[in-house]
View 1 (cartoon, one colour):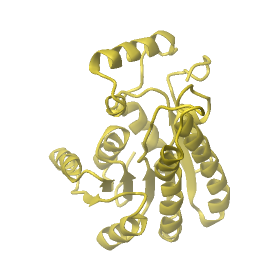
View 2: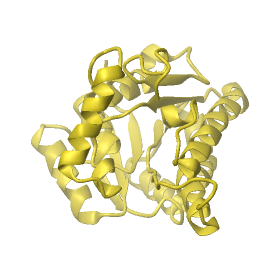
View 3: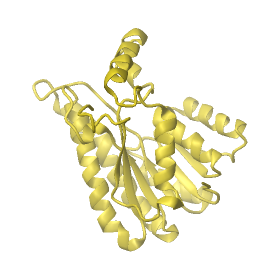
Length: 254
């Protein structure tokens, strides 16, 4: 599989799934645009990509909720085109219908859903030129309810429908739109929620006990799925929601 001469924008590229996808696609010869809010961490990803012998990526310190036009315009200005847009930036908070605040709910929707709409709209003219595609990073929480993750579940379920509706709308333009729906993946997300290392390991061990594959997901699992769905070998696939979950949904878990 090769992404030679393809320009790939990755939002949320400073850590976790986004970081892994950017490094993996760069190894496959893609020209990568790294988008995130933390300049220092983006530069670390850039240096790792260069150290791997891949071409130098473009680093854009930007907020997806405010800077969609900048992200698209700077990418085209630097590389001349866009072939793939990976909407990975996201956030998670713990709350239920009983205690969620409208401020928290709106912020989650803004980051996980509204920003994707904005970036997608602005990327469409360039993706049409290259017959490119869009990959949205959703979650098994979009496919199955999870207690105390109200805003996150709602935003990811809506993102799944955005993926399907966009796939129908954009197919006549030659643009594919797909999503991956990961279950538990070993990323910094859990620490960001305030979970310490011991509690994190206990959580991962609990997942291992009921995931059919006997382990939680690794970033390499999501990177491989992203590369497949955005690559030429998946040219007939659009509107796909691909669980990357070790069989968890099939077994009735999330």
